[in-house]
Length: 173
Image (cartoon, rainbow, N blue to C red; front, side, top):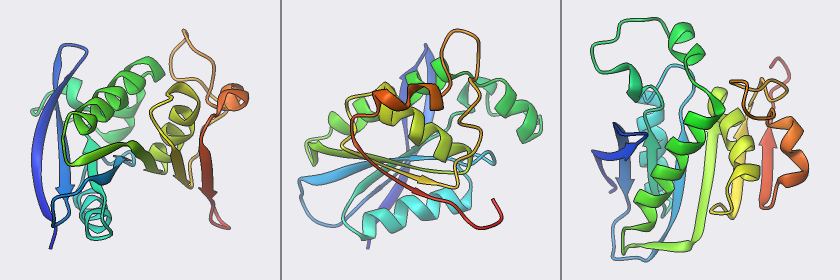
């Protein structure tokens, strides 16, 4: 049985919550950063961290909307529109650092997985960070568009991908 809890880290001088699930045993375990869909770190995302822990990974899902604060009532479209690739990269790197700081993690076996909006982020991070040895994209869209003006789109960074990348796309996506 996996243990799940909310943990905290800092990213861009903001407290970022992460849903973390840990498998039974002493490890060292591979680590997995789990990137939310646009609905946030909801019940589905929390269940994904638990499923990964049951498979033997320490899994952490960062709340990419942490800069909005807990009282924010904006819809997910507005919240997503405030993200930039730079902020997302900082958040994912903070999550990877959080995982690597745990002695139960084998830091040489760190991966990233994302769903929908998170699939786009997993694609981006496969090029933007050397921390990840594998990336899995589930129906990641919007890879041809940069979030913000200071960086190229994930697709424009394709030649920079340095880890194994697996992508899944449904027939209607």
